[in-house]
Image 1 (cartoon, one colour):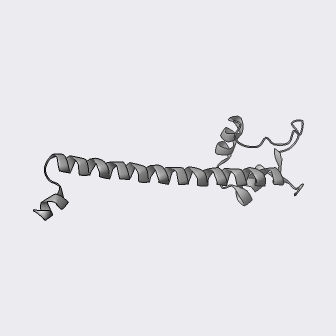
Image 2: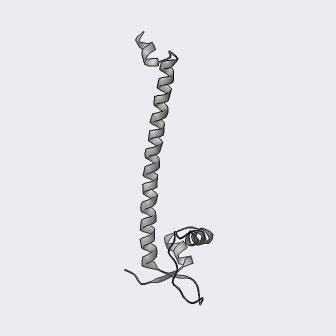
Image 3: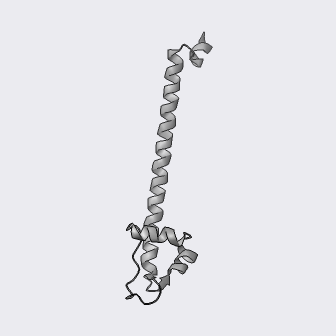
Length: 101
């Protein structure tokens, strides 16, 4: 594990292309790693290994949400298709049934 210390600008340039305000909002909400305590002297610094580990979790969670959303979208589409078929049958406009006539 790297013991390299990196600044917010390095995080933005090398790791996470997000705005300073986004990062500090996530930090305030407890969803971004805390910087090292430097007694108010100098810029905020983070251990690179801590940021790398956080990024791995962040990406994994994003992929899981994307998978969950695509599954939910497919279920929604399936439900809409089922409802449309039922409505068509109920109104007597079932295309498959009409073709068989």
